[in-house]
Length: 417
Ligand SMILES: Cc1ncc(COP(=O)(O)O)c(C=O)c1O
Image (cartoon, rainbow, N blue to C red):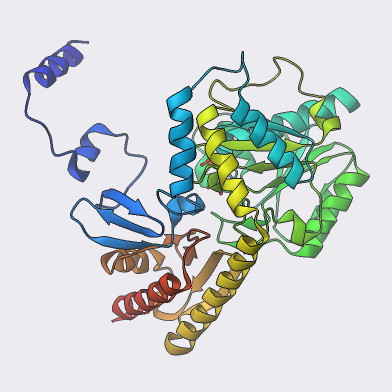
């Protein structure tokens, strides 16, 4: 207490304006992130400028979030138009943007009902709670088994991080929620052996994003669908990273040919504004009665107004076709780089969510390549220490993609030398 008082007094006496730079970050923020030194100042489309005026081409888009790039004029307009009206009314009242966005999601997908929250983790939390509650209310207390997969990632709430298949994120926080089984991804036989009448949900990402950009095979996704149907379990597709056009389809369950019972979407949905949605059928939604779940900010008019605009733009078939074409173009360009450097063991993903596994002198050096790219004015992502991940805005131009690949080539050369 005494120390707190001393600190407060010192802060009040210090009337010099600090630099608000990366050094101050370390003094005032919890140390659970390690951001780069650059601090962005403004963005336009797939370009960002830092506080020193340096330009970066952005193939990260947050982490697959800014679906239409930075400061898209139509999104700025949707947000500011709503901002001038009202920002928040709670779920004691509803609001027009929320109804409009839910209507659009229902029109565009398998779903009949939508629940809004603010992030991927929150909508996955809602999905898992719904799957459990639905199974228990229909079949009794014993039907609580959740099947998830090694290397999957579903968010950082304690339930979702324990369902996620990366122990490093869930260990060290005390007793974990139970009845969660992790299986190898894309292993149909393991899935067949594990799903039974005690299973309430199978949850999977159509492409494991954080876990290394690993696509689910059609066979695996379809087996999950059939096993869930045969055992009265919910198939939950976590499309937080693959959704909203990123795969080249509005949602990736379409090309996989499986209809989920519950689907979660966030990241790209708000184009950078925090919002998430859980989509489900009318029948399953019945298990959420008044008061069973909720969120203060979920369904905020600001987030919903922006997301409705994002959906209008992204669901245009021409936009989705262009995502598939640009994804293909990027894959070919990576293959050319591979011819030149012999650097990638694998190039994989869907649409504009692509991963390149490093090999040879670059093996396990994704961080070094990423740093070098940043030096050269290109922002990219990693997925673990050995996979370069690319998730540009869906409306990035072909010219920008060509420029990015050229910079990546330079960065690969510099990292090797
Ligand atoms: C597939 C998937 N699910 C859930 C999440 C968690 O989303 P959020 O960080 O918005 O809570 C992520 C984030 O990377 C994700 O990729």
